[in-house]
Image 1 (cartoon, rainbow, N blue to C red):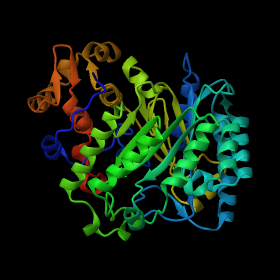
Image 2 (tube, rainbow, N blue to C red):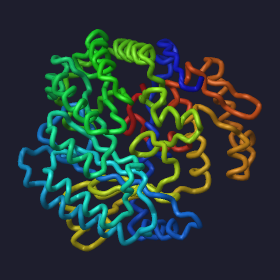
Image 3 (tube, rainbow, N blue to C red):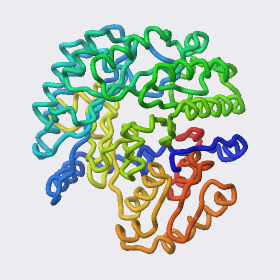
Image 4 (cartoon, rainbow, N blue to C red):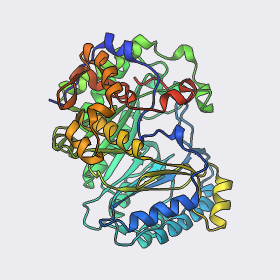
Length: 463
């Protein structure tokens, strides 16, 4: 029941406001430079001393791309000169060594992700060496039981690379598509055929990748309901395990490459909602279940199973079945989550290099959660992952009375209850099918920081 979703265009239009994406709580807008390297080393030391130290999740940021996609809001470096990767990788290896010295070697790496940019921009030799450095510093699983994933651009990969990735231990793959329509592709500067993508997809299946995800974006320039439905139909034929349909957030004042997109080419807000609604119908009719926050999966996929069992979790890499990991981010802009803290790496290549040369962990800002933050993060995580919060569970964890502590929030939620987004029961909050696509809106009720930041400058619309 909790994996069904109802698309109500009128309700979604009314609630389509600005807000965070809740890859973390508090959101990255609260990170500050008062949190530094010393703070980070202390929280790592504390985490090592826990009675049962958490397993680890590693994220490696590889920012290089051969060409620019105009919609992209990621931290990337566009260059056709592959030699530019060499000094960055040297620094990255050194950072991995520095971080490896901090963490207890007995802590198992349950999750590993290479993102970017375009990770397969690297040569076979570079990818092999990177994994060797990671293995030398961290306890990587060799039994194929970990979630080890890599982002793939089908335009930047060959069949032999897929074979290599599997041998290196990767068992999950996320393939960027966005939209197959040639008109849309020209408008976003990303020419990628269906045949090219299918070839990579089939090659990954042949080499035994356990889970393949396809990334799509709705709201792109020149996109229409008909064109995107054609893309969705082709994706359904491919039969991936998971599908993510992200909202294109047009923020040209923050991301320079988006200035190449003409605003008059973007779908109207009404067209954008129609594209989304038709996509949801097509995917659910094809048997996919709605996991939440833009993600769909087959009913037997690990994410869907974990959600039904109540063990689903969400971190900076998205939804995960590993609900209790410390996250270590490597490379420029990468974010870590260790115990009750967040920290983010330096943003530029030069400053990153300078920090590494000084043998310093390259952190420039972060945030240490207080008790109220941890409590609210738990409530938001439960809502995002399970569409459900049990008051007694929160009471027992944090020694509070949920109804008293969140009296004001529960009062605010009553307006959403009138719109049939959720039901406030005697001992729980249950998000209803109409409210599941508006889960971010529901979470904002528990976010104490939204009033302290300029939402227009920091956040996009939630749908």
